[in-house]
Length: 70
Image (cartoon, rainbow, N blue to C red; front, side, top):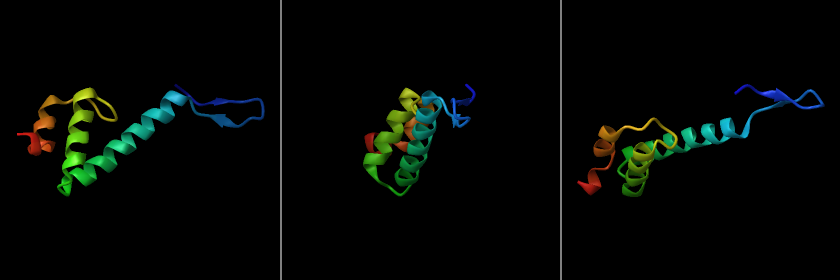
């Protein structure tokens, strides 16, 4: 989707794009914490990989970032 302009000429970003960007940033923040050994973040990142929320689905990476469950 492209940004639209409102009646005042201001650019408006579609809500879906804003949400996707937030989810991607949330994933990056969670991944950073998971790499430091935070088990809660490891679980969250694994769930995000499983569901494809904030990142492309990747069942193989789940086992890499969620060693606490193995």
